Image 1: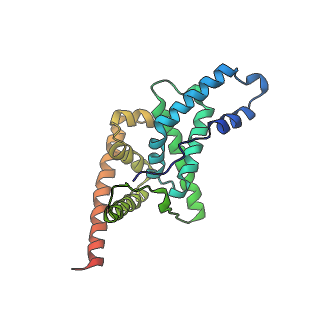
Image 2: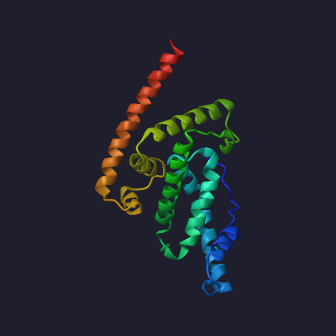
Image 3: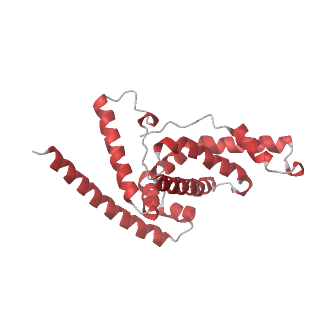
Length: 208
C-alpha cells in the first residue's frame, strides 16, 4: 500500500536548524548553500517513497512515518558532505534504519501499538472489496514482519519488497554477501511458516 508522505519536505527549516548549530565562520557562502539545497531536494525527490517503505517495513508505527521521514532527511542534510555520488541510496538507507530502530525502541517503552488507516491512500480505481483485501494483506505483512528479528526483517524487506540485489544489500548494510544470503533464507522460511499459520487460523475462525 502506498503511504501519504510530506512531499513538500521542509528543506529551509532543515537547513536553518543545521546552520544554527554552526559557528558563523563555518557557514557556507550563498552559492554553496544553494547547491546544498538543490542536492538535498534531489535526494528527497528520488528517495522519499523508498524511505517511507523502509521505515514502514522496519517496524515504524504508521502514525510516525511522516515525522521519521523528516528525521531521516534532516540527518542526511547534516551529513550531506559525506554522501558519495552513486552511494546516496545506501547512505540514506542506513540512516532510515537507525531512525526506525529508535522508533521501535520508543514504541517498546510505550508498550503500545498504533495504527492510522488515514496514512494509506487507496487506488482511485479500486473497488471497496479490493481496497479491503489490500489492507488485509498489508496488515498481515506488517504482523509477520514485526515478529521477525530486525536483522532478518531488514534483509527480507530490502530483497523481496525493494528488489535490491544481495550485492547491494551487503554493501548498504556493511555485511558479507553470505550473511545476506543466510538471513534471507531464514527470513523466507519464517515467512512461509507464519503465512501458513495465519491461514490455518483464519480458516478455523471462519469455519466450513
